[in-house]
Amino acid sequence: MQHKITDTEHIVVLEKGEEVIHTLTQYCKDNAIENAYFRGIGAVDKLECGYYELGEKQYHFTIYDQMLEVVSMTGNVMLKDGEPFVHVHGVFTDTTNNAFGGHIKEMRVGVTLEIILTPLTSHTDRQLDDDIGLFLINCGK
Image 1 (cartoon, rainbow, N blue to C red):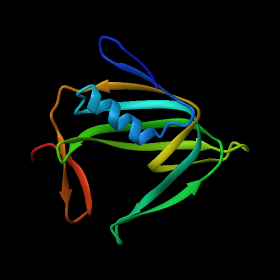
Image 2 (image 1 turned 180 degrees about the vertical axis):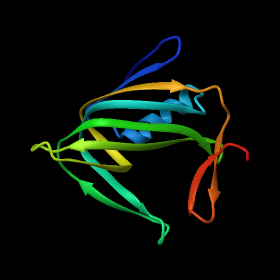
Image 3 (image 1 turned 60 degrees about the vertical axis):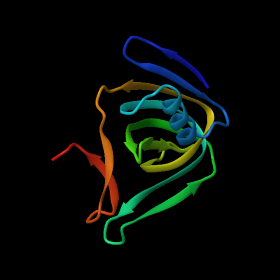
């Protein structure tokens, strides 16, 4: 990983073979980033992507073990149980430019992944919503 910190953002470049969620989580821990949003582009060679089935309160994931273009990756970082929690969604294309996307459980960089991460000054966390079955952002109702 390479990175550069500007006045307001972190430029984070992940390299071939790096696990994205793990690396971003560790980067946030190392740089005391509790809340942030980010966006990125690049290519991955392994992806676990899916959707949440509300009726079952369960994610359903598909594993893609192939080179995919990351057309758009967006996400946020909020505290969960006192630690930075990275939440990522993405849109991908295959070798025939067919697009698909969803919630990302994990992905591995296949070429490079260029991320612009913007820290927030908030101290917001995620709390379990029993009706939904997920840890949602808690803005203090």
